[in-house]
Length: 197
Image 1 (cartoon, one colour):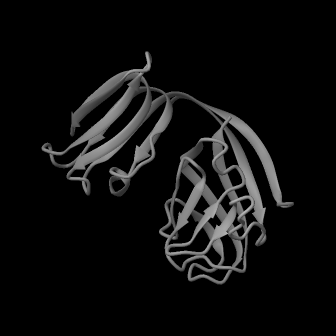
Image 2 (tube, helix red, strand yellow; image 1 turned 60 degrees about the horizontal axis):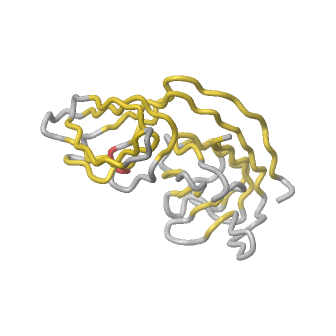
Image 3 (cartoon, helix red, strand yellow; image 1 turned 90 degrees about the vertical axis):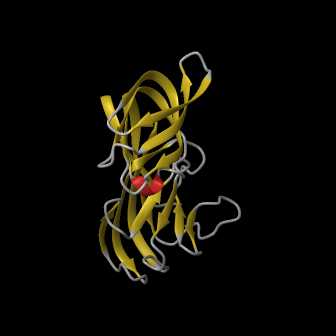
């Protein structure tokens, strides 16, 4: 991984908003930090979410939050386990303080399906990518950028973020999931992501 570099670090202060898209509501990884509130939005007042939270004293509680309402903390973990009307529901979790490091991996095929490191590009359905800090840090599931110089997949070259269909998600462990067949080897790219300091 000679191309891997740490590009810098920065602080994000209150409130840092985790916006959870409807399609991911049932399958999200728990997020950890210090959270002040959870807002539930929907165009249908009958929609709601079920969420498991851990309070500051370490106890776990399961609560239901209806659309249009806010649940106030503080609490240290948020895990959405169910959402009624999931196609309409958007959840915003407000974090009090988050401190992140910014990473960039100048990727040129190293680490392919590596049984030793478990890092790099994974061929599968869909394809995915494990970043250099995979399973060592808690990664920001709201940020991932790829500056792709060359790629034999359908997406070709260009600049991609989580707002583009080609990148489906990055989970807290640091695994990026791609839209099937959009990225393939050989691939040369600058992959940027954030993880908790």
